[in-house]
Length: 529
Image 1 (cartoon, rainbow, N blue to C red):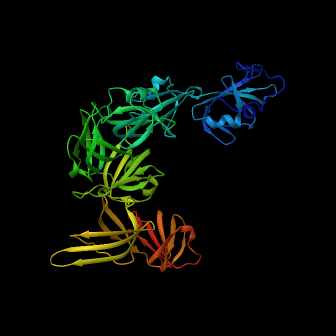
Image 2: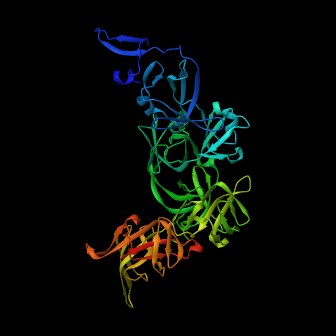
Image 3: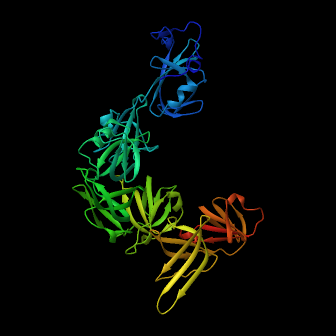
């Protein structure tokens, strides 16, 4: 590491030893500080988090916060700099050794990059033994305490030997391996389904550059502690998956002989809340918007529809970790998807458990549940329950023309403060001017306009999550849209989108909700007069 004299040696004291290296012309080339080994006690720490004035280090029972002066000397090998300069490169898993002086003050620090064991991919439950972790090792999975049984297949694991701690990461994406940068022989970045990801380990490099994984293959990238690709598995090695099909089509792909062609593919929402793209063995357009089982053979996905029925029901209590008579896992992932209509694209997204807390769900509200090895529900797919997957706004204008020959409609919508003009031919939607609504789409085409319900009564107070209206308490959506009625003064439009915090004091307003709160409804639109 090369730094300026001022930064590197501002901490030098009388008696410190330096080496001076000269160029052939006699000028000073660079200086190096010889490590002073006369310090007293030492202590090793593995960095967990870097703060502005120090670090949080892994501890045996609790983490330890250490603070350092900006001018504290830091050695990286034989090159020294100040803490203020060196800290910029510190990261999770790096090691700092503190050298103390005779008065137990910090004399200097020694830095070592990436002192963790790993990464090791948990392929068949062997990660802990491969890392050398003890039977009593503390396990943190995605930042949450976990047991060995809760480690999942293809989790990327590291070991902090000093504190007997295992760090596991579950983030992954599945898609089509499309290209490598700068090239496949020297891949530093992988392009998968149109997105670029940094390659972070020799394992990932070896697989992505080999002839065992070719352009056009469906692959799953596994991400490590720094967010880069730590490992790669093919779909066949990952096994069958349950998913909700968002869309399908054909796309250009490259085969192992670098010949371009067109292949069928699907985009799917997995039960862990992540999206994936797979090359398929045929056209699965009729499966869009459906819950399916995806299996793999010869590098291609095959799809079979699931019944979409679950027996799970009852009150959802996230604090008690119960859903009816079932127990919920701490790492529960919930997704909500739109109901199936043949010939339409799907819509879905992740919902956090707090969203359902205190609600009572019928079995018809749940399409699928999955249980872990403890018998706890760790995956739930909802049946179009929360409405959080849709867009909300106002129908500014609606015009329907109907005759014995044809029906057509034109609509001006206001969504997130932006105006959209929609034309329909052969069909029309029942909608009123200035009607707050939510909107369902089939790809880019409007599929339905669903009116919101006005909550009768004066809004006495409102916060980011709660409104008191007519003496009753209503939950407020975290993406509530607040429109100020400007009576057409804004380029002919009637409403201006404003932040919730900008509602004038004592303003008169009307709230609109999608369904009753007991069924998961939220205040979605507020109109301020």
